[in-house]
Length: 369
Image 1 (cartoon, rainbow, N blue to C red):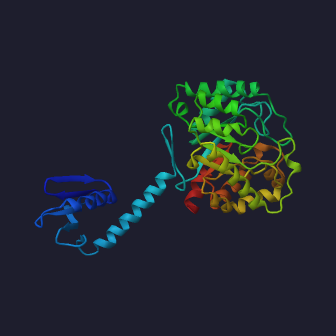
Image 2 (image 1 turned 135 degrees about the vertical axis):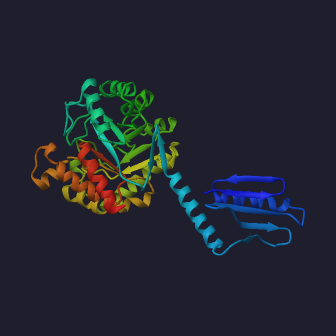
Image 3 (image 1 turned 30 degrees about the horizontal axis):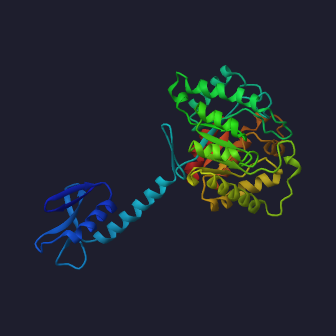
């Protein structure tokens, strides 16, 4: 669809109705002759059809043809919706993320010896690259690389250990011969400003901070300096202490207020408000029942006007409900939680089992989006 302004000595084509109308209105005061006019024509299957005209003999423009006014009103609405969607879009490398269109998948790549689900499996550059390639070929949208375990009871590593685990893997991915792998958006799961800076320097694109920017607030300034997106998660305490901190008076209200406060701090540090993702922190300082409540009441986070990230993959609350002590046996329980999260408004899911959760999300998107 296109629109053309025609007046003596001037003719121009516009893609958007609102652009054509703005220019035509700006020309009205320069129209000196009673015998000339300004017209806007719409491109149709049979040529150009006049839909708007203005001349000095009229006090206001005239809309031409039956139903023209209603048709143009619909164009205003459609263009406003397109602009709204565009303002919420992320462009990272060769990928577009249009929030609300579908569910996006974040594939987990733990390069740690002690993560709860796959610790020690991918803690060399060679094994990490193999898993990264597997996740990319399973059509993950983001690779989430973590160099420090956040499982309940885990103890922190040093900065040097975390950097030495994460940076070589990022560099190897960015220099890979595999095109899909080389261009995949990378998020780095860290709470440390120094690690975040090193990762972004090495080619990462997004920071995923499980502390929501509370452990090292400088991480917000680092992220802002790179104009990078940040994912802020709700957490109480530390991985060592969090499961003793599950006493909430108002679970969803407290989560929303925490995330709102941290999002405000992120914006104050210079992060674009459109580049903030919120995560309710499934499994972090939450009981089994509280995790279920979060999934059922996820819409409460929509008041923050940010994309919503949910990470339930293989977590212990699923194992407790299904009596599955082994994390890798929780695939189908994870699938159910992913479907629930999508039905209640999740935009991104953090998953270990790429091919299986891809199909779950495709089907759930058809059902609920």
